[in-house]
Image 1 (cartoon, rainbow, N blue to C red):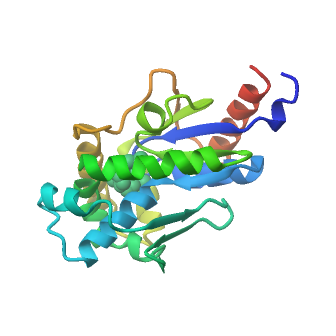
Image 2: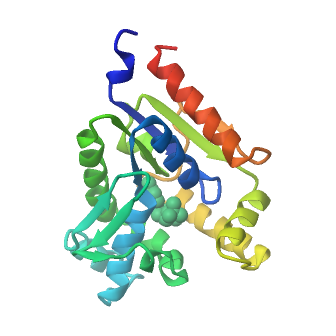
Length: 228
Ligand code: DC
């Protein structure tokens, strides 16, 4: 394709927790000179705001009523992704166990999803070179016209082992249970659940190194840009 490299390219990377989505997406974006968006961080940020504002997480109506209030800003440089809420840097605060255990409930509320989806679409539209967007519903709902959709999977054991490593020696069995519970909640919610788009390329990362997954996705993007 003539001038293919100059076309903005939109890449959607979905899958459950612990499949290497973030590491892969960041590295692919950095290698190809694209922007990067971690949509899980946005759902974690709005959850952090709900928790610190004293909103009852068990009450979807209360969550829906204030879903438009916090101002969530994502920096999309893959070498320095940032996330803030009302001007406060929450990059560390959104990774606590408290936020992780509440995020599925908050992100299941339709008003939260429509608010965050709007932000995601405007960031994707503003990315001049293109963007890698990682999440759960990017290929199915947020960016259904993405140039490339990838769905990463891995066995529950591999995912729990990776997450435990990231959490510096956390108990693998407990991490596995928590992951399975969160994935079940994310996959069974009514509004845009975790799902593979029909036209997504599925990559099982169980037996692959991170470098191999990155190489695989970079190759898929380059093939798309070259018009196959
Ligand atoms: O990728 P992560 O583990 O940081 O995501 C945290 C939670 O956010 C995840 O359990 C479900 C929710 N999420 C979502 O509902 N839709 C997305 N596109 C991304 C994340």
